[in-house]
Image (cartoon, rainbow, N blue to C red; front, side, top):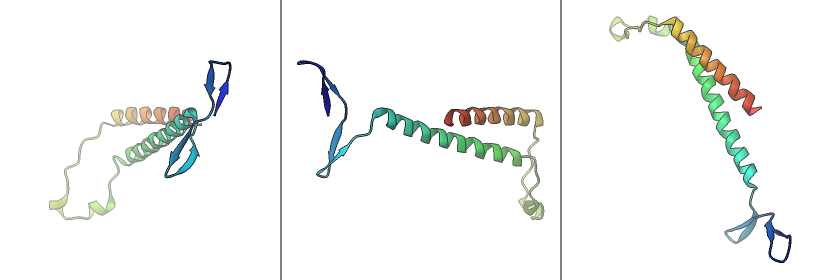
Length: 103
């Protein structure tokens, strides 16, 4: 569909495409971008939520692994709690920003 502004000037308004013999109206470009950005923000937010929840578990002892045989125990790493708090603060800040953008 198009709008004629003059004898030589035409402005396209809608676009259509044919798929398997059926005619469909194509979505507007702004709607396609909005949907893709929204989907990307959802997955980014989900990733930050998962990362934050896993960070909360660092440093806690797993009771099931505590009762296993001594030869199967893995040596524990030393955790720098200052770095852990800094990383947790950065992830929480980024998660807030992503949440604000997606709203």
